[in-house]
Length: 473
Image (cartoon, rainbow, N blue to C red; front, side, top):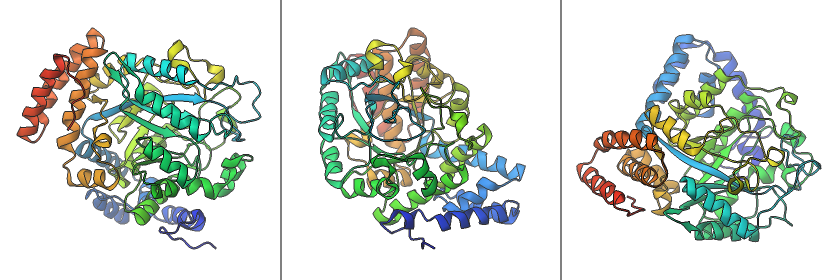
């Protein structure tokens, strides 16, 4: 039996299998315990979060009225902390060369059907220009693990190239990075290169399942992969993003593991993850999701999103174009704070304007263009935001959390969201989106709580109309 220790540096102690199994038993025993569930919901209303054990009891709750209360609470917490702002981003795939044998990913080394491609710096520049042409300011850099074809030096050169491109009124203001687990030294290099969030999914926290899903390659090392966020934070990267790939393993196990990982980072570094991602397995090339027998039904998926919001109120929740418009619409109010839009998941997909499915990492379900996504968000009463201000102003890690927990973040996020939306409307939007967007801005600027900030925002919105750009608070 491995002892559970959230402060431990060892993966199997801060993600303890015994603790997770004990939590699952505890949830089963108490799923109809109304008194305990009501008490837990009352605690969640304080917006200080819940432990993995408390959250799992709510996940197992079978009481219809209490489940409705859980969903309503998630909506309230989402609105109070994040307002109706939704941050937009796009993935940028640099290389699909990979030495790993992950059985759920078409990049796996044994796949001889997939055309392999690695972008040159010139091709990266073309991709960035294509992204800037539609209005994206925040990118998530993606690459398969291959020390020969995509070493750290290549990634660093790519980041430098991305930041150097300024096309018309466009520029990339934040590059988040989703690459393989690496060393403290190389994480320091990424930090010095000016990345935003370092993102790495665990796929599953179950060690046995993980090793079956990753039979070969450096990613097969469960401990090294699971301890990667510790090394990133030791290297000075303030913001890290975690996630699991729902559908690979038992969702209950991974829900608990994800929350335990957040508790570990909080216990060891004083600040938890900046974001959680909640992807589900999708078809791609030689990958058939039906081969995995842990599929997650929509209703439970929605409940997981709601409970991640309740359990970790200040963690950003990300949903990609893996999910349908309908699903994304349902979960936006439950807790999702970031979505991708106009995404391509193949290497070189933006410049050509065509998604090459035989080289894509997964099939996109929501394939709308960015302007369609922006218009959709506006129709739903959300503020589409291209804001990157907190990162660029040093409000990261524990500094971001202190602003978020005090509620002061609203005096930054609301005006920054509106100013970046104004930029988008002026430079990229269709006429229909402009009409809707200006209405939202006129209405929402009045909701900025502090008068001084509200007046300043109104002045800067006028300046943006005259051609000035990149204001931020």
